[in-house]
Image (tube, rainbow, N blue to C red):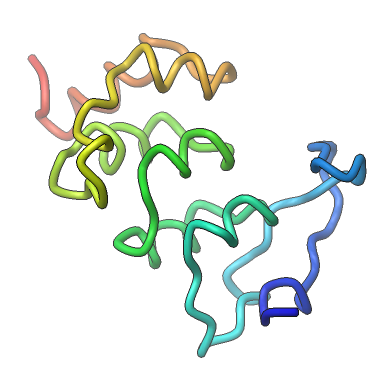
Length: 120
């Protein structure tokens, strides 16, 4: 069992593959010496601040498939090829995000991109 499994996930209404409900793990709950990777994202849900702190350790596809992201996070990290960990990450488009993050809208993501001056 790794550090992240020992921390455990609290409950917020998102079902895991085992049928239990998971809540985001807060930054305070992640041990300072923990090194997170893509496999952790498949087991636990993490708060955006934890994901941002460890962004260079994750594949973008893993992030959009296994974590609940914000429009701001997607605009800043997912749609920016500078954060791509793997070759296939460079091909992620708005449609992929909307497919895997159904709580987000195109308008929300576009608005965040505009704030970052990524689009006009």
